Amino acid sequence: MADNGKSGSSSAKRKHADRDAGSGRGQGGGERGQGGNRGGRRGAGQFGKRPKRKRQELRSGLVGFLMTTQNIRDDRRCINECYSLLNKAEEELRQDNDDGHETKDAASTAGQSIEDLLQQEIDELSKPDAMSRASSFNEADVGCKGMMFIVSDSPVECRALSDAIYNKAIATSGGICRFIQRFLPVQITCRAAPDVIAKTVRQLLEHSPLSASSPQTTFKVHFKSRYNSTLKRDTAISEIGQMLLDTAPQHKADMKNPAVVISLEVIKNVCCVSVLENFMARSRYNLSETSRKAEDKRHAAEDQPPANLPSKEKGEQAGVPDDDTDNTGDNAGGKRISPTTTAA
Image (tube, rainbow, N blue to C red):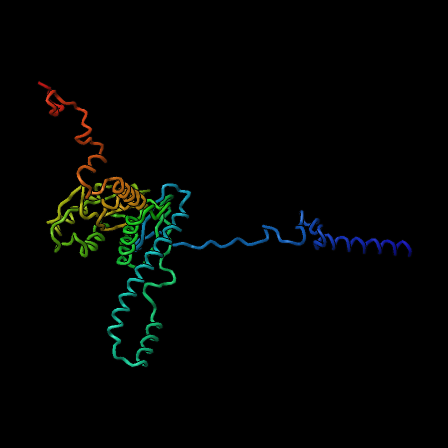
């Protein structure tokens, strides 16, 4: 009986010891469970994986902005920088529109009662603002390193935002971007096939300076392909050229300084189509290069002497000696000798 009591007591002690070791009490918890966790904390393997946010892929029918960066490691910084530029430009456009509406509303509400004004304000607050959407811009997966695509909602707003950003880049000293290289507005994306591209371009040209009713101007087709071996450059350009020759023969091709550029950016099986003006003035829509050239022009203008200086001061600044410091020498009669003549 005594032996049974001792064995029962030792068995109970072992159970208590095993329970304490497995529960993580103190600092030794989990020793029997393949290493265990200190203090009862959960290990990394016990947490579920965070679900990745699903992004839409670059496909036909999108409107937005195509960007490139020089360093593929800066893709995320480039995206964030683009979001910042677009949000600021959108806010400025919204303020300009609000100022115009306030001026128009002030003229239209003259003589109305307070009740009518309150009702109009309630109606305005209940309307969704067209430019204050919860998610104005979204990223689309391009599948090409160093290239990003931001989806917008309308081609009109897309062109207005790009114009505002490039105008600000030209006017701002020091530049407005660090990671964005090319910043190209895309009016529409389509399937990278010659007939589909020609049909898409035809629709865009109806509301552009290259329409059939527009006066004569010059154009160029800019083609660049990435990760696509089926669509040939000559085939796409000849298709667009033949279409323009049939619909608007008054327009002429100019490879050096065109007024309008039809941009075709092919990425895999998608073509980003745009009809752009100021293509060469904006360095082929290279935002960083446009900022750099504008900065160089400002520095060159600062180094030049003012245009309203007297002629003597201009000569001194340019390093031209005046009459009193002429080093060409005089003859015996005291007359000045020209550098191209000799004394008699």
